[in-house]
Image (cartoon, rainbow, N blue to C red):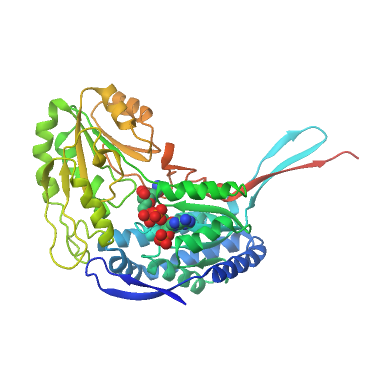
Length: 452
Ligand code: NAP
């Protein structure tokens, strides 16, 4: 049996040992999920809805425990971790409204009746990264289950604890065995098998663009359905006419939340040159007040990075760009990294690559056209923000930026009832919002002749 030691990134202590699923165990779980699909798809819509609502209630009742597990396993602040567990509950509640509403169409056709059905796909494989273990799991499994599919779910090898608990809660809530199976294990074993196993009819992958491309190539062999949520290098565009105090106060939260380990992190702050000096003066205290420390402390704004290896990777980005200023971080055990603001050139690695750490790059722009060109000069296209008081400009720039999720005078990207996903190499497909269950179905068209 292969096991993995689970480390608390705030203390570097081993907090659990988990069993990693083998190829044989993965195949067995997929076979069970395939069997469970035949009955789950036939559960009456209202009963499936009721079971999902019970699952949501079980998550709600366990919210403090789930949040504590995430604080210990991933170093998330307690406030964020509570929000994340609450998000799983809300996503389940929201999609519990879907089973009775998966209506097809009746389309005029001569000589008969034409109707469409949204048929579930079968077994869906959900592959989750380490940065948001709970929400990303829920965005996959809740709409998939609501649409009548069964799910096998692979958490990241280093952050499996909340996913394991969610699997237990599903069973406690009455979701039948085999309908949602959590398989902690390696990407190269469990994740790859979701791609190659013919009974897994769809893969939902969230993670790096590099692994996403590999999964997309693999799914091509079986024309397997696929949703990809990949990396981001998102721009926060601050125009001279913006409320600069507000823009500077909110920029750290938009970039440094979850220690910058967020695909939506607005790590490129583009500032109109005429207000650059004033913006930097306002940004410095805001970054220094963004407290990095013990994630169990309610007043902490960000915790540690996930691992020593990841900290080394983030540190390497400070080599080729001037450091404008840094905040503070604890010393001693833990993978701490102080919030850092760089003023790089437009071609610096830190400005072009996804750092995935608490590092902000501030770069000036000349005018609206330059801001749009700079924001779009990346293969990513996930999210972005625009700070301006000019409504026309806000809408013009929102339409011009090539990204799936834009916010004006705000950094909010995620609401369970609005669609989320990327343009360009940030992904394919959309999660969340009213249409997500449809992404777990194929449309069937049936024509019934009424000829005598
Ligand atoms: P990753 O290395 O790509 O891993 C993501 C998941 O894929 C993990 O569960 C991993 O398993 C698994 N995996 C690795 N190799 C695999 C393979 N060959 N076949 C199948 N599965 C495989 O990404 P990460 O470093 O964990 O996560 C960070 C990335 O996720 C960032 O780029 C971030 O932007 C992106 N992200 C995107 C979104 C979005 O919604 N667009 C949201 C959050 C994060 P192991 O843990 O065993 O390696």
